[in-house]
Image (tube, rainbow, N blue to C red; front, side, top):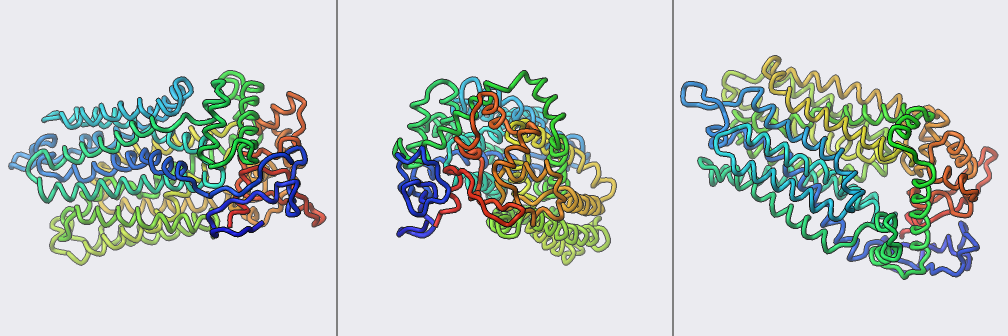
Length: 590
């Protein structure tokens, strides 16, 4: 299947070509299509990745800036409370509300975004939520002395941030070629960490140069408008997603968009199979879906789906309970009395968080989900125990400057903790959630899991000041215990999805494959998997085909959902090739 060309930058389709001697996974009825190689990344797909991922940068930027604000003298004077001796401070309630109301806004925004996106489209929805986020920024900048105005501004900005956190991955998934969809999700996560890092850098810069006036924090908030304008205006130069256009009856527009993003002619195999998938999903939605209540009810009655919903919500909960956001939200406060500037410390922590995310992208594909997450849990337990012990037993909490060595040790242990988090639980849980649910219930399952993440994000942000005030650095022992539980949950309940198609992962849960043995599980044939999933009622496309008396083999096996080649092994050791699609082309990228 390898042809002359630049290694790694071309996608080949020879294995699907009925006219090629290399054709092993063919559909004879498609012999007239074009099977010529396509570029791995086109200029338009690259531009889309960079622009749309700006939503992730906005998410990270808005999350990361508040840590520095809480320690800026002007912000303290305006919105803090007078201690009676000319100094100002934030009470636990006030700091908790200012920090945590963003998470409540994001939760509401994420839930409200989908109906609007279905009504006016993904592209215009992005513009609307950018405007709403901008309103939140304006309210914050206009605040003079009313702390609750800052809180309300963060709540409204959170509505936009939460909506964009849903719309950006949706736009990418509905538009991007299958062979780079995973990379685009990772790009989105990478931009989140970049946003947090930039917020720390800008906080440090304004603290140094504008320390005693409102520019120290207003400039940082105002810079966020640049990102909103880039995304909100830039998205207008891109087409609507092909799947949304198709649902609105604009089939020619949908096909033209695919051709431009893929860099393929209209009669290319990849375009045909993607249009086929869009048609199948549209047919499924119109054939088998009932009302919202009936769909939710059927989701919890379907075999092993409630189990996966609980697992998804639990994984997202423990991603927050790793304790990472404890550093991101309150890192400046934690290290404020260490001789190294607390703002420099935040730049260090967030720089590590951003830089090592690249390592995480390597680990998940080379060592698998289970091994990476369990190793990450062990790593984080060790360094949180060290962090908590040094902070409680060695640091002079009355005057930390008396124990500078302990303060430096805290920074080192926190940095090593972030290294473990950003390479495992940080990016990988989001990838796991996207592959955990069967296609029929994926949107609802992911929504519930994401809601769990935002809920625990809020709880940690709000209650951390109270807990640290009561038990100081021993709070780290709580997070260490949570990391132990998170690792155990992965070990006993999560199956290994590395190199598996989404159909195979669904089948593993339906067949109750023991998670500890899931890495060695041999998948049945495509026909057998389709039969298992049809009986369970978890795949909407297969059910729709049944309802319309269509043969699954005539369409290929769920063309747009597979992530690798589809060679299956029977119990007798014989190999069978299954029907494929453009998504399988990842197997022939050279």
